Image (cartoon, rainbow, N blue to C red):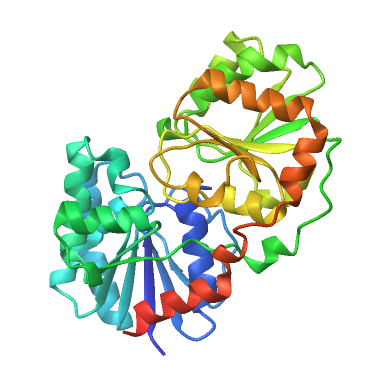
Amino acid sequence: MKRICLVDFDMAVTGGVECVTASLANAFCEDHAVYIFEINHTGPCAYTLDKRVRFTEGVQGENRLRGMIKSCVPAFIRFVKKEKIDVILLMGNYPALVVSFARFFTKAKYVYCDHGGLMNQWRQKDITAIRFWDAFCAHKVVVLTDKTQKDYVEKFHLKPEKVQRIYNWVEDEIISQRQEYRPQSRKILSVGRFGKEKGYDLLVKVAEEILPKYPQWSWDIYGTGETFDEISEKIQEAGLENQVCLKGNVKNAYQLYPEYAFLVLTSYREGLPIVLLEALALGIPMVSFDIETGPNEIIEDGKNGFLIPPYDLQVMGKRIEELIQNEELRRTFAQYGGRREKFSKKEILKEWIKVIEE
């Protein structure tokens, strides 16, 4: 039995990284002692954790990176030594950066998990420098796509065996929620944390062009974050407050998916989007920009959804209108079963166990 610690920035956030952190913790605790160490505590955990997972709250009220490092590193070193942690999974860039210095003062194996795509932010030198440092400090790097694995090896000159691609999985509980598709639905769905990278500004622009033509249709967005108020204002300025509804946070949002006709993702960048994996598992048609990494691993264009040239709002609008107007097309997309087995929890968990036990 290994003693495993997952380090996350803020488990109160309903984001993809936090969802994966909770899923991994719950899966690992069947055979291992599992801990979650939180960097920044802003509220209760947004995801249901197994009672066997031991949770350590992070620092409250500290927003500066230097302050977090100063507060967390000594505490984390003490924590790792006290609990005799064997393997540490660093869930994302900033958790890895904040506690990476502890790597040189403990005997644990450090695994840096990048939930984005390296080339998505390559020109942002500060982010790229953080990723390089995180990868340098770690014993192992886990990424979400084959492309990102190749990029890490080529750009950072890492040994191929140091970088491993492991997909996010779809929980069996989610798959069991699948219902017969409801083509009569007149509701569009988007789910995700409100941040600049999620492209909700683009969503409003698309909605402004489309929804007034279809007054019986609405568009619901689930999530919260730093751009929530800004997007709310944009919706009101566009006169869409009766058709675009901000629903806030909700636990287990996937339970609501069957109420919707299709899901739209407008992100500027992604790793391997959990919301698309959930939609795939539940048979919900999808529309997404074909960005650097992520959506094209899940969506087969014209079979279970549409991939749109990055940030082309005209094409995005056209494809959404196709789905609005064509009930049979929505039904066909929903019934397509390709790529679901690719994200099987059973097989992906085996890959994680190898990383932990090697």
